[in-house]
Structures are given as structure tokens and as C-alpha cells.
Length: 85
Image (tube, rainbow, N blue to C red):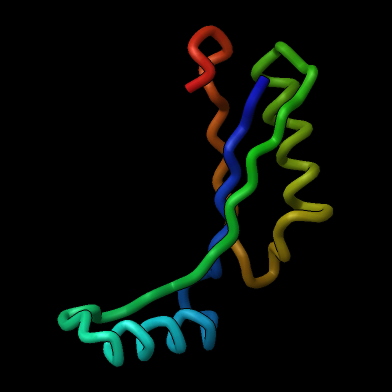
């Protein structure tokens, strides 16, 4: 089973990298960008075929390694096992 995991900073947490990107976009002539927040994206392949067990394992993976849950949120999207999407 394939999963896509997106990790983002929680609201209220300062994002200096996002601010730097925002400034660089302005310098490159991209007007109207009012904010940028950066995050992380992971694709994980699991041998598990049960969606509930896969989600539980991924929650544990995120909480223990992929996300700092004090300052970051994460979202898990399980891909359709038949289509791979």
C-alpha cells in the first residue's frame, strides 16, 4: 500500500524558510505573493494491505520520526491499492 504524507508547521510557528522563499519570489518579480509556508512530503510503500493497520503504522511513523508533533502537523493520504493513485 502506498501512502503520501505531508508535514507542515502548525499555525503560529515561525517559518523563516518560508519567509526567505517569499522574499526571493518578490525579488524574482512574482508580485502578489502574500505568504509562503514550507513543509515536507514523503511517499511510503508499505507491505500492509489493511487500510486501518496501515494508517495506524503510519501514525506511529509520523509521531516517532517524520514530524515533530510539538510544532508540526501531518496528513496521511492512502493511495487506492487498485489504481495506485
